[in-house]
Length: 238
Length: 245
Length: 69
Image (tube, rainbow over all chains, first blue to last red; front, side, top):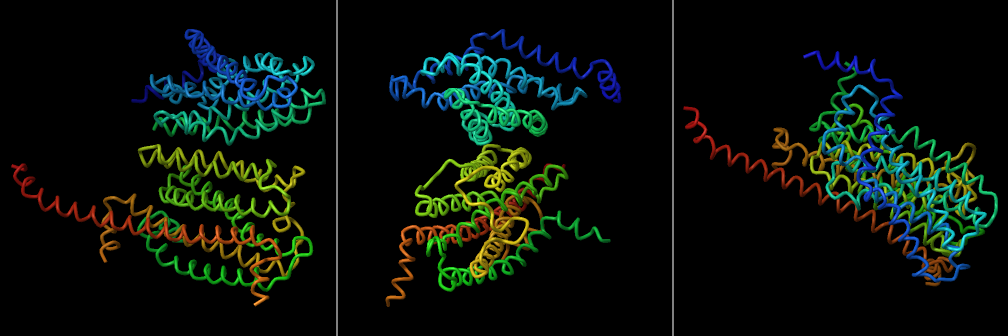
């Protein structure tokens, strides 16, 4: 009856914290690349949504340039939401999450690694795509570094906030709407500062201040979100 | 021996009966204070130099805004207590707080909007305080939605408790938003270090209303708590004495 | 009379002030009514549950005694 405890203790000794995170991250990335179609979905969604605005508002680049920061950010926010539902779902269903919780490793650390994988698969590609979408909306080329920086940093915070929402709604069937209701309010500060940073970049002004605030939100997310995510996962595994 | 009262707090029948006995002690003073505050605020207190009689909207907007935050804090603390120490009554308290908090927050937003329209020239402004108060409303709604979407009561309790605790970060943002940013909304004149920057004749009715609304919340919470306890205690024998008239 | 109409006019802010007050007190009253109705409903359900269980216990007792053998 005590074997589980001994094995767990041995497991703690055998797998270092960094190795555990690395293994989790690598696993998630590998699994995601097996379903390449699903991987591209958020990016395609982002492209389509940003295309809708010129069609709906006006094809005039001068007008689009004014709304471009907002459009880019709303589209990025909604796109990263898409991938969130599947962040924990498959692992919850096949029991992997339970194994993570029982493994003796820190659950919040492992879930942080999973969230990191989510960011690498969603946030980072969005940060690289955003300038292209921006250019199609009449944004000057000089704004590109600013756009990449703000979306890259902001999407870190978005992934972390989203991971909390995904963990909380794990027990709810068809959680899409509820997930958005829970995640979007908490994501609003990120949206506000991110759009502000992008706006300043588009105007050619210095965007350091909102970018630093975005960074602060990301750091806050990194420190606190995994704890809440782990707590929520544990409740849903009970 | 000193801990017996504390343990009794975890006992549903004790809390139920205590709540029943305490409710009138909150409800009647609340009603009287509200009446007094209304009379003092609407009739007796002097007209403001800048805002004329319009400032009297403060007597409903400030109490509801303060209450919206206070209720959320109560909810989050009870949720945390329930989550950490596994005290079921605490979860019942949190569940009872949410609908009150949501309606009061909506009230705060609308009264604020009606006050802002003549004073700032706009019904709404996406400044930090208004935005974070709106986020507070969404948090309440999300909490209630999560509860209703989760079938098992115990799991609903615990998962919504996680949400309530996570959302507490919004509360300091609401309060300090007017200090940290150049906001359309005015800086705190009451909840700050140092003396309040508001005239005494206007302060008194405000304090009356703040106290009245707090007591009102306590009374309504106690009634909802009793309902919540009854719906959770399915098979308990103590219920027979309580519900058979 | 003029004082009363001045009072209702609230220095021109009547259109904003009175809806605020009315809404607030509507919310207050609604909360009280809603809570009390919820409590009444919970009591009714608890009463019904107790009655049902008393009924089923009385009805089930003979069968259980039979199954015991």
